[in-house]
Picture 1 (cartoon, rainbow, N blue to C red):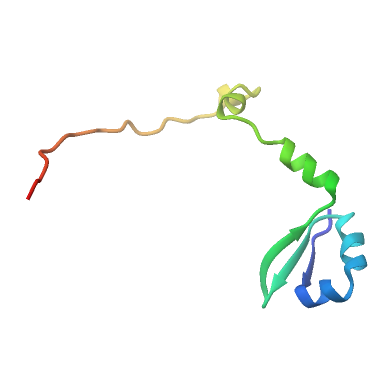
Picture 2: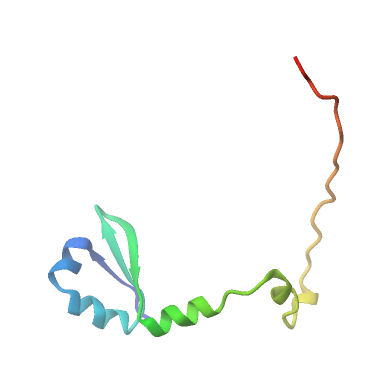
Length: 84
């Protein structure tokens, strides 16, 4: 996978170049030197969008039981309300 970076000006001047580059990987588009957008092929977008899963699905993945995860126990205390 190749990552290409183009300025907004370069994109405006040569959209075809950006579309061709997107076939090889994401194209980062910058505004004033800072990344602002990403151009992907529709196939890559659909592949990424399809990967969303619920926490239950992630925990049911093979090998998830072998992952060490012991979050600290939360301590919840109450205190009197201040109505002043």
